[in-house]
Amino acid sequence: MLSIIDWGIGGVSIYKAIKEKLGPLPVIYFSDTGVTPYGRMTRPELASRLNVVIGFLKSEGVTHLALGCNAASTVIGLIEPSGLKIEGMIASGVAAALKKRPMRLGLIGGRRTVLSGVYRSAFAAHGYKIEQRIAQPLSGMIESGDTGSEKLRFETHRILFPIKNCSHILLACTHYPAISDVLKESVSEKTVLIDPASELVARIGKWQLSTAGVDVFLTSGDPAAMRIAAKKAFGVSLPSPKKISI
Image (cartoon, rainbow, N blue to C red):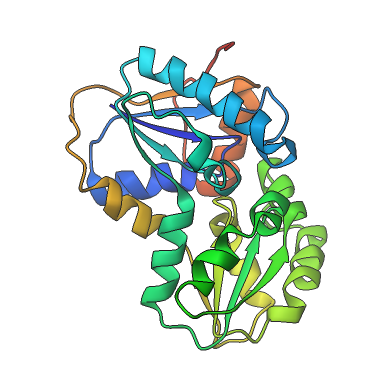
């Protein structure tokens, strides 16, 4: 059984891509909005929380796990796999960008993702420099259901302005594909936005996964808010998300 973990509904972009590319593959989606946002936790706190969640998911029959969150993926080396196959966003993001052979590469992501230096180091190993911008406000607005307000557009323009002429910009947060049209308004018409979801899904597609079962949506936060945000951001109707305490 496959599971996707994210703090919020950004990982729904991964879920949606799985359904479009891999068909009837059952997924347990876990949104952890009942705790401190992953990007605000210390590295040990985040690793500890993820290990607790992973232990629970394993007890639910999960055998394969996708971290649909860049912040969570920055501590993948501290996670106890407990026999599970785990794939994060970082490796997929780097691979997706390298395939484009960018002349000038930019990146937008959350504070933890950018300040961790994981992308900078990964691209440097391949001879690429990267221009990064912290876009924390955008994920918060998308999580609240805002995908097109004037405030969102203002923040998007402010964040992207220094890198608007990059040949490629990597979307290092799974929330950002929800506002791809808004992002395109603030960059050069030649700039290519790179969504690593397809790369991650291609990797998931190589796993041996059962097609038996149904999708399950769980959250440590508010199920109604999760359902509304997923619909507004990605047009995905989540069937009866269930609140759990871990």
